[in-house]
Length: 338
Image 1 (cartoon, rainbow, N blue to C red):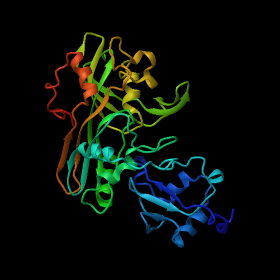
Image 2: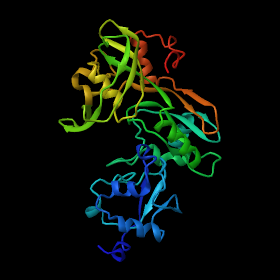
Image 3: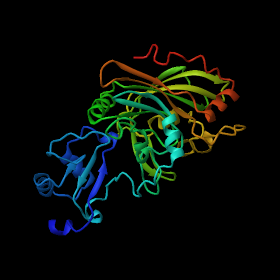
Image 4: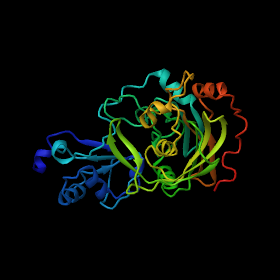
């Protein structure tokens, strides 16, 4: 394919994902387009055909989560078996009631940061067959800013709770660095089947993606990426189930789900990892993933520390109440943990 031929197609626009933040632009292009030669990348950059958020850039530019990279038309079939577009289908228009619901979910808002309480069932970014996702709804959270907010990290579709958004490129850079440098601390609440052998501990199992009967999953593998999670039992119902506080010290895909399964205590409702063992008999909501991003403590882009908490959604609160858990006993979420 010649450069002239490539210009007859459609411009490609891709969103930088949170786990790609900090990568050099030329290396990012090679990852997304394994068949793309360095010579063509350099030519595109030289004549301004590759742009980030509309601006010309150099090969060594470091990417930030949420940025949009524009490249000239390419033959996707021949060049990118690993392309990860923001979505394979354009997001559908946001209905007024959806926009209003999203605005009601704002837990914190200032000039630099928005923190929302993401509902379970809402994908953060698009994928095959997904035309409703948070990234396609962010115009509803622009408020008084000139830019739409940007994603700086992710939650699984079925996980509820804290999600941080940056309101500018500068804020996105600082927030992304906090996640990358592990100065951001996150606490999750989970209901698991069974009870861990120790009341608190540290899980240090490397994780790798593998394909199998349930599709692609993350499993413990010494050859995988380092993954570390702290856990603590807050309360339990005999040996039947336990309420855990989980603090991931690394940010691997499905880390908490895989680590809980590795302990022999799958998260309630997590059929992908726990199969039938993840469902509690007699619990009507047992097929719902019982994992909630409860709190975050993160350096604020303007200075100081931002700490925000998200209450359990009604669906999970009903489970906690049914099991007799006292939601008032876990107030100082970060106490005693560094």
